[in-house]
Image (cartoon, rainbow, N blue to C red; front, side, top):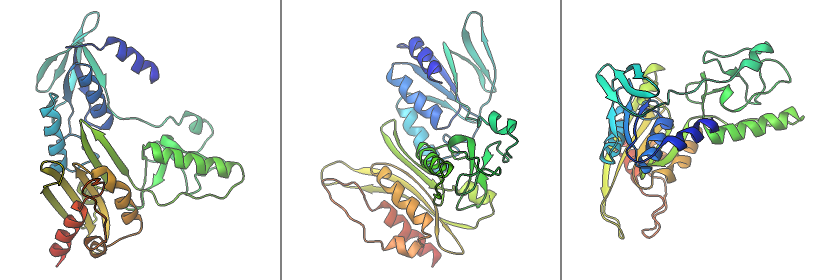
Length: 312
């Protein structure tokens, strides 16, 4: 809550040692903010790699190493068992030993606040979110829900799931509001679309990961590239990119990217997934390039060409 943030802000100061429990986007962004304030950061989480729900392990490892270079101590594959202290926290006991600290922040994800829906007898999904259709109408006629408390149909997996993204909350809220007022709006096809700049690094993740594809038994052909490019105005820039294509339809279903220019590709790749664009169409897409501006570079095209060659 805002109140939590205000309390944390009052406590943080140079050399305060903070243990952040969790390895998701909120945990990473919190680590970045506190590091700028001069805090010493230790991140602890049980998953094999950082941003486990956002990246596959090869891309996650690259991002973790960038965080570690900035001074964040990352302890993955580790669980917190207890906290010690008298008047305030003094240590966190983990499976890999005790970590002394002055503050602990739990960034363990979120759950939908659906108390009102339960009281109204509105059905919930498997993640305790409110089930909605493309009009954002619940299973109770005339009642609408939107934002983080709703469960949306993922265009790729066709399964209901919570998708906690600000842009989606805004769009779904508008659709729900218009329809509640008598309109007939419908949401478009929905997938994960994440892009951000954290620790000075641009990141992108759209669609599903290889891990998710395996869970949903979707056969995938993936293309992973590390590209190093001499820019006319800058030194060598390295970009890491994953592209995932459905091995049967050859359509794009997921992409992850770290490096300069990654954010510029997010909406292009999202639209490509929604419009069911094939590997051939991306491989020879007529993209723009301006050396001085360099907003959109050719990494995605190169990765698609590699995938096309792998398809044969």
